[in-house]
Length: 318
Length: 97
Image (cartoon, rainbow over all chains, first blue to last red):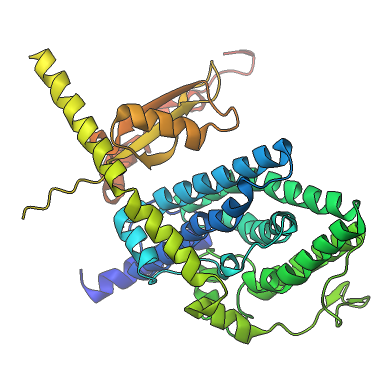
C-alpha cells in the first residue's frame, strides 16, 4: 500500500472514531491503534490475573463462611474478567501464548497496586473498597471506548465489579463498628492502601505519555488527574462515614472548587514499584510463572485426551 | 525434535439468556475440546444466571465476511427502496396497511 493510500485510510478511520462509530477486529486500523490496544488491554487482563493473588492469600482464612463465599466469588470474577479481556485482545491478532509470554518475561506490565502485601483481613476490605473503587472509576468510561470487543468486555466487567466494591466496604464497616482493635485494623489498612490507590489512576497528566493519543481514540475519555479527583471526592465522605481518617494531612475541602485539595503523591514510590522494586513484585511473578509451568502437564493431558476422544469418534463412525 | 506442542483451540460462545430469545454471541475462550468449552463457558459467561442454553463453536469453523468488501457485499441493498413499505403511495383513507 502506498503512503498516500495509508494516509487516506487513516483519515477515514479517524473520521469514523470522531463520529463515535465502533471499530471491529477485521476493520482496517492504523498499526499504532492496534499496538496501543494490545498494550492497554493486555495490561488490563494481566492486572485481573495477578490481582487474584493478594486476595487468594485470604480465602482460607476468611472469618466466616459468608465472607469466604464472597471472596471466592470475587476472585473467580477476576479470573473471568481476565479471560474476557484476553479474548478481546486476541481479536487483534496476538495469541494467548504470546500474551502470557509478555507477562511472564516482564515485558508487559500489570497494575502496580498488586505488588503490595495483604497482611491483615482488613486489607480485603480496603482492596474491595479502594482498589476496586478506583478500578470502577477507570473502567466505566471504557464501556464507551472505540474498539468494540474492549467496550463489550468492559460493560460486562463493570456490571460485575460493583459487588466487589460493596463487599469490601461492608468488611470495613463491620470492622469499624467492632472492637477498638478491629477499628484500628481498618484504619491501618486505609493508611497503607490510600496512596497506592491514588497512584493506581496513573501518572499526572503532565507525565502521562499516552494520554493525548488515547483520548483521540476514545481509549481514554477522562485524564488521570480528573479520574483521581473524582475518586478522592467520592471516597473521602465514605471514610468519614466509616469514622476513619484518610492519611493525608493536606486533605481539605475546597469550597470554591467544589472538591477536595490533597497532598503530594510520592511518584518516586510509584515508579519504583512499576520498575519491579515494590514489596511483592518478585513474589507475584513467581507465583504466576509457577502456576503456569506447573500446570503445563494438565494442559497437555487435556489436549491428549481430547485428541484420543476425537480419534475414537472417527473410528466409530467409519 | 519436532515441536508437538498443541495449544488449546479457541471457541466462540453463544448464550440464550432466556427462552423466547435467540442465542447471542457472548465472547470466546480456549478449551481442549467441546465438552471443556461448554464447562468453561458456563463458568465464564453464566455465573449470574445469564443463560439457559449455551452453544460452543470452534472459532476456525466460522467463515466471516470481510469488511474491506463491504461495498460489494452490502451496497446493492441500498438502492432498493421498493423493498420497504414506505416506498408505496397509498391514499390517506387506507388507515392500516
